[in-house]
Image (tube, rainbow, N blue to C red):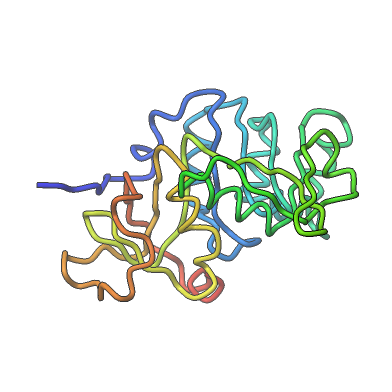
Length: 229
């Protein structure tokens, strides 16, 4: 019997090694798998490369992972916001490497990895420091920059419901990067608020098919978290 369910978040991340590249879903705190991030903190892996939309908020979740000096490099679109003091301090002191990627390019580089695309040309970033050192080509009178896929060892994502095969449905905008990250990682770990029996998910509502998910762990969401998810 195929079952991708694991007992708890600690078990789901027990094999993450030092130096792993990890995608973490979320647009700010919406869709961010906080319990999986907390489990990664407890697990102890260090020298990590993190791929995320932003570089953490406040002092919890991804920001806490940065603050524990467990991240060597972050690849993201929005490293700075009003409450990104942990990132700011680490970056300014030279303790954290940053690869800044425009959000559209970030999403497409992740999607390309999952789709098996070797590289693609994008007009975004042409003529700016973001294009330095990259191949540029003129196509039909417009300049494009060559971008490469982003692959990961692990993807930590959050969904609303899932089944034991790993089929997932999301809650509104909490979907964000989850589906493409699941397809771009060697091991996709999904935390869900509810595990349902096979057949209870409407096939038309399944966004991430189980073929892209290796582990599912149920995490009970607090009422306040449900409102923000």
